[in-house]
Amino acid sequence: MNVLTCVKRVPMTGGRIVLTEDQQAIETRHLGFTISPHEECGVEEAVRLVEAHGGESVVLTLGPADAEEQLRDCMAIGADRAIHLVTDGDEWDPQATADAILDAIASEGAAGVEYDLILFGNESADSGNYQVGIRVAHALGRPVVTGLKGIHVEGGRVRCEREAAGGRDVYQVPLPAVLTVLEGLNLPRYPSVPGRMRAKSKPVASSAPTRPPSRLEKVRLVVPEGQGKQAEVLGHGVDAAPRVVELLAEIGVL
Amino acid sequence: MAALVFVEHDAGELAEPSAQALTLARGLASEVAAVAVGSVDGLEAELGRYGVDTLHAAEIEGSYAPAAWAASIAELTGRLEPEAVVAAGTDVGNEVLAHVAARLDLPFAANCIEAGAGDGAEVTRTRWGGSLLERARVHGAVTLLTVQPHAVAAVEVQGSAAAVEPFTPALEEADLVARIVEHVAPPTGGVSLAEAKVVVSGGRGVGSAEGFAIVEELAGLLGGAVGCSRVVTSAGWRPHTDQVGQTGTKISPELYIPCGISGATQHIAGCRGAKRILAVNADPEAPIFASADYAVIGDLHEILPAISAEIRKVRGT
Image (cartoon, rainbow over all chains, first blue to last red; front, top):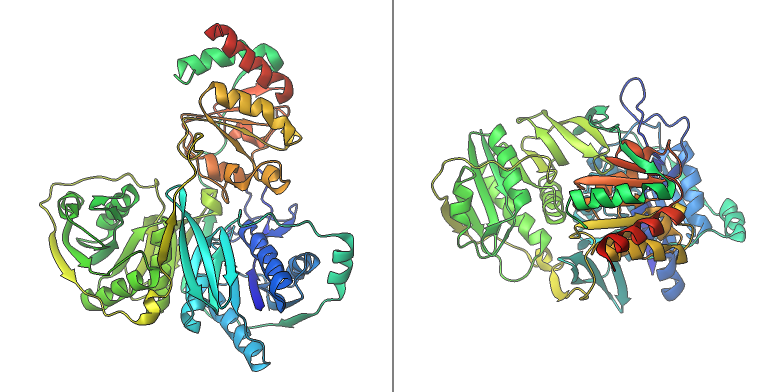
């Protein structure tokens, strides 16, 4: 089976978010980059599915030239090749992102590659728009199940599990389908050194689509107020224990 | 100016995030109608108290099917022509509105905390699980948005029960392909992380899976649950179900005790609902202290056993 996984390059924000002067983005000069945690599990799941069922695992990103780093990371844990829709670094809104992904899927189809499963993170770590996977599924006329922590392909169908009310809701949809996943779906492997070496020579198909106007238009970013509390120091080391237990009693949790 | 609000309910009892969404919708429209799926008996009185004049009850047989629910809302949107369609920013609310947006080819702003109306409506929405806000404009003939849960307080108004107007949406077979076919009950036993009154979490500073014994001991003495940071689940020390964070469980205990957790935004996004935070960390400069009410500075491997011992001493056990 062929599996396409869509990923997004995002900064590792650490403890405090600082914005660029124009308030259009996070200041990333001192930050590393990764992909959204949900998507890491998506890439791992795609690699496992292809290991079990054969076929090809492909990763796709819409992002700046530097996002090739994330595509290589995905190929280091087993994705076979990558599609890079290169941007100038400006954000694309969810509709434009979905349309660009659809164009790429159409190009793949024209080249004879059809995907049985298309995986997304349930929402990106940064902009959190909760919709690109659903828009892609709708345009393709395929069923979509979101927020998954369990995926089991059985014959031409996929059993999907989503946490709800402490338990799990189960969906059954026929392939081809679009699925969006959550962290916890699996425990992604670490890339091996040979995996990293192999990733360097795996193919990346690049193209540079043109960004349409945003219909969900970012005006500016704001760091919310109320960050930066002054914690009351109860003590240092084991000597703090009696004061901690007094506090537990005061707030009624002892 | 009219708004249509998709409300979630449990057998006629309005869900709190939907009450919050109704409150926000009232601020941007003079007329608020609601749409709900399922058995709505009793819902009309409660909706009246949130200023809803009409409840459109979509009659869809069987279990949750997001595309079918969205089809009914899209159909109603075409008929009523509201300026805004609003839902709660829950799993279901965000999913259904994304489907509506795809069907109607409209932009959709998820998890807003403030919103205006009309084409080009200005909204403030959350990013990074609430660690960052975005001011945005939504360019659509109908403004589609969801309301971030617990960002807007639900406020009732004087009002009589909403009039119920049942309708049977025109559905296609494809709308019913993805639907719930089974529910697997939760495992019993233990304190649920999301519901616990006290949560004690460990991070990188715990050092190993075995190191969690002292975290478990303290949580057990307080009748609480054990949590952890993302570093810990990625290392395989604890299962992902224990993770507190943007991509883990969102908790809201009376007291949260993060130990050996630096306080990355990923983690803070999961514990913003905690009433009080008591952080234990060896590094006095750790960002976690900027989100904490109380601090204990030092080695958790010494401090946690000392706290547990002190609790036993006080209790005389």
